[in-house]
Length: 293
Image 1 (cartoon, one colour):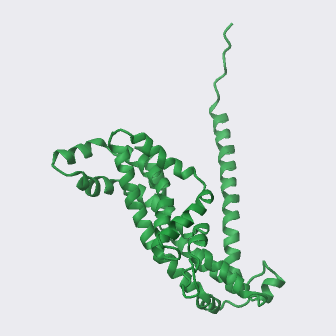
Image 2 (cartoon, one colour; image 1 turned 120 degrees about the vertical axis):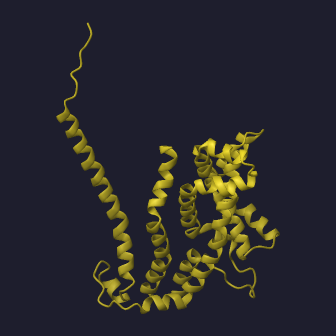
Image 3 (tube, helix red, strand yellow; image 1 turned 135 degrees about the vertical axis):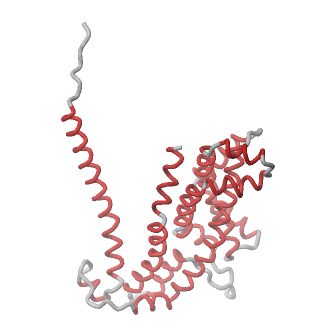
């Protein structure tokens, strides 16, 4: 005989929704504390002295002087900061340009080998960078680009291309085909259609992937460590921030100056926090717009 199921009552559904909301909000609150508290401790430690840090690592600072940031800047953080900015000013726009162009062609044009090229880019995102360090080093060395801005910029662009193509490919496929066809009927060339029609429509996706590339390249450590080492006594140091923080720690030796190290980490961290908080809505819009269209 057929089994009749009793329909769920509205009260039971509301109860399940309340339990789910409490669990999800509680999880998010714990996650936020795990992120905010270490950052707050790091910033507050910059205003302490070595004695205060050694006596009570979680105590409140007694002196709110900002001189420690000046000392950290003068000890090399300023040069490392400038080197990082120089590299990212060129690497991020080039990554976005070449990645968007490749993703657009793969998403909007059908040709032989299209899927092979797409999966070739996607496979690059799954390839661990550690496996390519030795051949990459000798390739850059053969091009005479070790310890140069242009060498690191080209490597950053190549390293970030797979994720950029993967992300923008999905975004370009969601754009309306009618707009593309209208531009073609009006006589627009493929180049003009891309730069003046399709690329502005993909602005949310460009901002999202641009922020991710900025964060990833700003925090990159293994690639500059391998490629940005002085090759001779006359070769200047062009360390980026991630390398510079290690150098700052090693330079201290037995003369510990922990507040300077904390201040250096804070200087390296604050720009990325500002960038993300300033564009967080655009990032969320870019991540959800492809699903909503």
